[in-house]
Image (tube, rainbow, N blue to C red; front, top):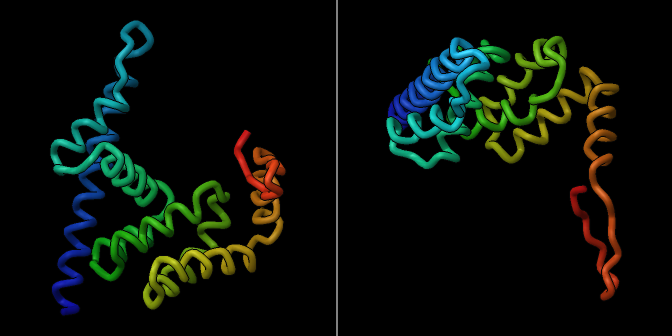
Length: 167
């Protein structure tokens, strides 16, 4: 069972890696076109990824985002994922949870995060990542929480319930 899971994880890595490669190739083309031609290379890239991988455009975007994160910000997670020791759900959770943090913070936390990912499912892993980041960079976590609440407002409805909405 473990061998099959590792095989499946390596296949998921290949999908994510391929999506990142196609995304990167299209964006490189966009940069080469310059400002004279207006081409929506991002949407074209997502369409090509979706067709090649046989998935929805949303999943293509998720694969490309995770693949670029692994390539640019999380090389250790990429290495572990390529070896088949982490599944896509955990890797995706790591990418989302560390998004927006300074690279120095991510570099300091990544070994602890990978160790936690080896034994936790994605839900508890998110809480563990929050604890790790809070331990390593409490000021940065506090800044992000304040920033997240800056664009929300609390409304009291007629029936007395409170609702949170984005501005």
